[in-house]
Length: 439
Image 1 (cartoon, rainbow, N blue to C red):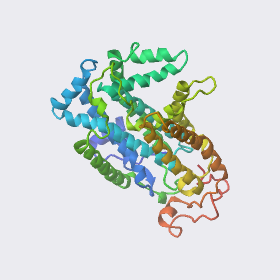
Image 2 (image 1 turned 60 degrees about the vertical axis):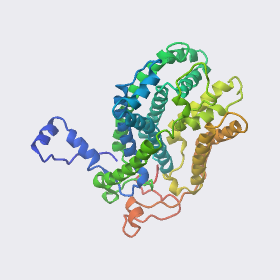
Image 3 (image 1 turned 90 degrees about the vertical axis):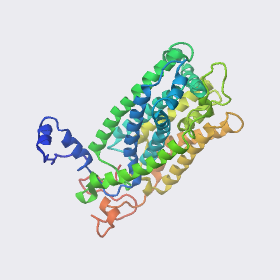
């Protein structure tokens, strides 16, 4: 669904003057007031607004923190402590920013799982989905570089381990690592580079978010049934219907966020990062932040050589491959039905995949010894098998449940909705028209 001709007419003189020269009021009205959204959206669709809110929180708090932070290896740790103790409300800004990263990832993971469950990545929304994966990658890079800035033990050794991944690549690995480090070891030049990139990347994320929202308004919002909009009865205006729902979800999310800030601000952090960085003392167990743990488990799962590929390069390829595979989901999914709610077989495998990712996250926090690497290998194999084998094959052999003929039928029932739809599985298309349930 693409936006049609705008019907917005400014009611006040200054707004009419501005609209004739720069139609910003018209853009905001058409995008966030009159924009039609499916009438059956549930609260799983509110995380996009929550993510926009958290991005604003991170940028604003980060800019203020940057005013007081010293990007110098000998001063960084003490500057963070000074922010906590000497800057007015510095403790609040620091805890907002540190916990905000975790809550940003909580929201993005829930947003992604909703996307996977309801098949929001399918045609014609491939570009919208790919932009979302790009945002996820930029978030991961930003979060990693931000984790280095406090210059505690886990910051220092995390930077040492992560930048060491690039040395696994022949020929180009060492030059890339030296470019990131600014030398041959993690030191002052590394901290300066990471601070500059950590400050820059959120604004790049904001730019891609604008493209993401633009693509959403061109193709239109999906819905839990996966049925495309067929008439005006299927939609409601964005305001007040979606804004009220998004607003309530934001309030609840911010209440949980505030609880962590005020009552358990260090719960999601690591104790070793409250110790100044020491290049001569390695922590007993180097782990990344919790939101990287599933990928860290996949990295450590490869403990053997694969032909000419040694275990180190194999682990790095698997870790990066776990993200790259997500770019190809629109073409890996062969099912004609968009929503997993109408796919009884795939629904089972989907929830197994969710459990698998959670277990991988737990394994990433465990020492790389005993049975843990073996379990991580099993979880990694299933992760890739889900996307590369199960998703395409099940889409070909599965008989989906009957879809409603329209969104209004899904909400109001067959007697009040438009059309009834008959038959088992996906209803047949009308002659000369695209079937509404084809993804």
